Length: 194
Image (cartoon, rainbow, N blue to C red; front, side, top):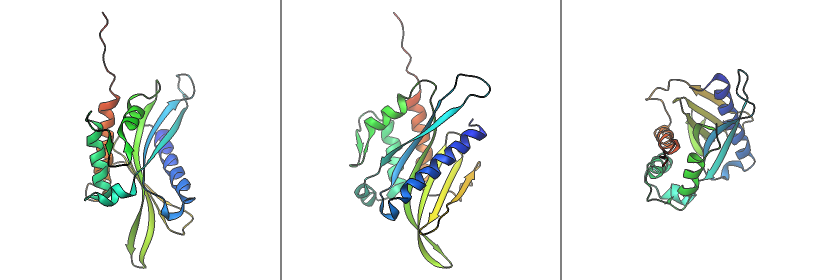
């Protein structure tokens, strides 16, 4: 179970990803993020950990060609991670590189969350607006949503410990599947000594 500090670290990483995307405006491609942390200090009651996010750009052509869009691409990616035969999903993500990043983390590192950054449209009473979203699911099933309307200085942050299945973003099932796939990949392989 992630600590209060860890959930704040995840939120901080997601806000940093949103801030980095701001420099590209609303033209940047969608990106998949895997968040880990690692210890900075020796074990003890005040052990400090450092979060890290690794981003993988999603190919816009793959997203446009997928019949289910971004949600379907995330689900396909999770399924492909658990199969040893696939090497890429579309032309974008290199599964070997992604699998290595999950299965070969440094000692005492741990997976925190999967996230996806993308641009969308929001229809409201004042009309239709471009928004940038960062959706994430952590290893405890907590849902993070960061939304920034084009031209606004601040993002809206929602962290939901128990997401309502009827009110989750369309990316939620794919992100949850990526968490499950990561759990399978990160299990240590047992070796027998002879």
